[in-house]
Image 1 (cartoon, rainbow, N blue to C red):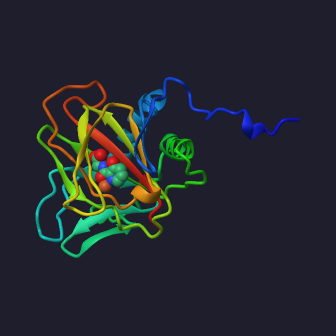
Image 2: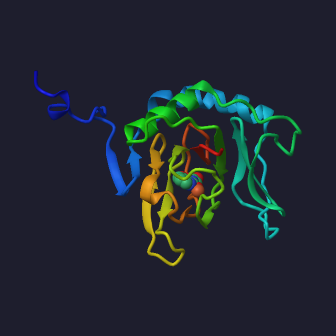
Length: 219
Ligand code: MD6
Ligand code: FE
């Protein structure tokens, strides 16, 4: 019998357009659409237990993005720095568990982009109101950079800024729409990135806002 791998196609559903941004960085267009209403309901439960809040940077600036987390660890920023914490400092309780639908989406998106075995233990939930931006940064608070980050865009579209490994490197602009998933790892894991100020628009998922989930392996 012929070796199976010789004749197999990469098993991605045809309507899931895959765009390669850079080595290890892919946009899976519409990958989250089939579960977006489940995610909507799951996020309502998460934000009831751990409400959105505006954190402070170590330089004492208020972040314009509203944030919360779910999973075993949540991302926290304050005057002491950036880190992952098992307890929400606002409520004194553990972060809400990661909803199964979000966990499954994270595993499946990572595997589709060539990162099988990804088991996220942290999901940062970002909410952008019109005019809100996220400055260029690297994600480097995680323990093991061999795991990717899975980023899920929901609601109003945004322009994702995608740079290089140095802050001064040129920056590409990538439009991310409702349901698009970016999987980001390998040689791209430490690239600078951010989000341009959100425009005025409306989408049924979250009205005037954009919601972004980033699933990570923190520890
Ligand atoms: C956002 N995303 O899209 C912010 N980080 O709202 C991120 O900061 C990010 O999308 C690492 C990998 C993918 C991302
Ligand atoms: Fe980031």
